[in-house]
Image (cartoon, rainbow, N blue to C red; front, top):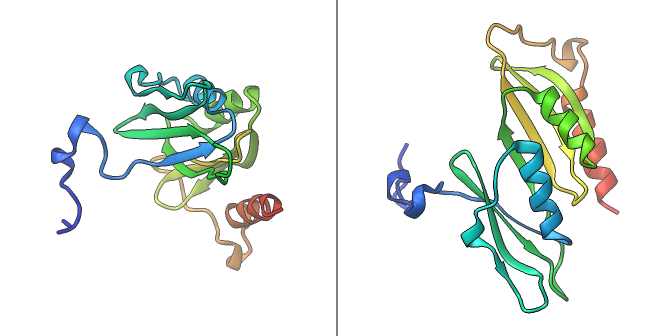
Length: 165
């Protein structure tokens, strides 16, 4: 479906996506390193915009066709961590790499409807990452209302409630 309001993807400058997330955290440079090392992507060097005090007002990393934009929180600004979804080759491998860089697993790799695997992590900047990997031929899990596990919902619910304070 095309939207009359959104620019068509082929018209977005720089081959970027129509929607790109922007997070504001303490220690943007640390988050850039984390994302680079966990997902094997590089920062877009020409986008890095430091202020005179060294804080970053803008930085970007390209994940597929989407730019993740990151900035340092300035005095008086609230933190604005993200809820981010990423398709990967192997959820377990990404979770292991992330854990080695200080992340916490929220949801272990779990079969999910539509022939995919879902896992979630919380990075040290309070961003929650939904990690998805294709899993063709994988049977659908039994829903919790039919006696199956409810890890898909309960792990996220617990994580978000723990961040509310």
